[in-house]
Length: 369
Length: 153
Image 1: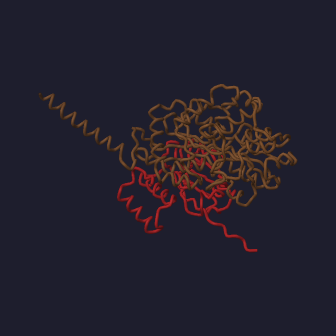
Image 2: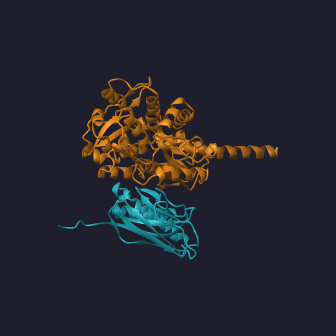
Image 3: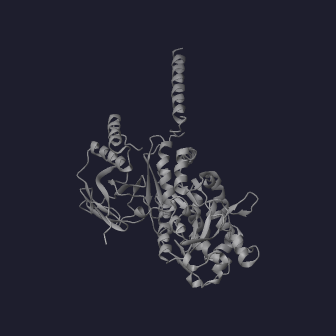
């Protein structure tokens, strides 16, 4: 009897503790995450210098994420520039503790480098995605090339075209080179060793680089090319556009509505729709790799599933917070709802892209891997 | 708002009130002061950090020397500054990497460029914190960015 009373009291106590616990994890203002994951601090690593897209993304997340974890951890941003993000990529993959206290913003270039087998010291397949945003790619040229359209670009001295990028295998150098090749332009230059977009912006301003494959956030909000675009120093040639549910590529509303999609630009040059293996590879790389998975927040390999889920839940809650959405939209100048890719959807896209397929062979051959 | 655990509620209210009374709102720099205050509550070691020049001219490509002494020998350090309203570890952007020598001293150079171009730092008083790799604050120093007056022609 005594034991039963004790048990009853214990059970009541347990029920009370559980109720309090549940109350703590489900406060209406979302200030507690539904998990025991409560780190003192979380570092977000960036592979580029401050003020680029990756950096701004990390800082917006860092401003809002703490309140979604018990103890409100400090979110510290660490820029680790060098080798087009490869140094940071190797660091988080090989040296960071897989305990949820370190995450990294990976760009689509990191995924692309894994597809290419570019000798990088990380493998995105092992790195869980907890956040992802898409963007629209935009091919831009300097005004001094005097090209307003893709057709104009095919008529100028190609040696004046200098494609800028962070490395031989980064998004701008690869997609820029593919796009120009598809248009039939040869003998252009490539300068693929800049430390990041913020540095490339300087090179474009100085006229050292005259072509860059940017993304739409670079022209919006606090984006790197806003000022140069407003001054008319850079001209938008084409955009990746958005893929509709039935697979058509249409102009995206986040880009100047007069900027044609690459297919439209191709038609003005060749008088027909693009086709063939190089086009298929370009479409996969341009629209899926670089548009759908523009920036992802990834964790080191081996991070326990409950920690991954806790981070995904915290980030999910943050993504529904009007204050976060307002801040994000102020920085990037576009609607968050258009850009956001749920973590699990991003994982699916990543897995699909990493599966061996014929387009990858064409792609590797083109890049010379 | 990030507050260290060892700041008491009255202290928070007092500091918060001070911020409100003096600046009509706490900036990131103020937050760092509050954080640093907590370090002094904990009792700091003899470790010191210095920023040179001070104030730092608010201009692109300015070279800032960050040096320190009184730390443990051969210790890896982290340098934290609020950049863009967010605590930021600048250790991978300074050269050489902040690590103390056999006598517990270090010196490194930070070239500010995109932080200023991107307006992630403004002319203001910030606090530079030196921590160990576990995030414990070991030393702090004011980091004052001062606007440079344009030369009259």
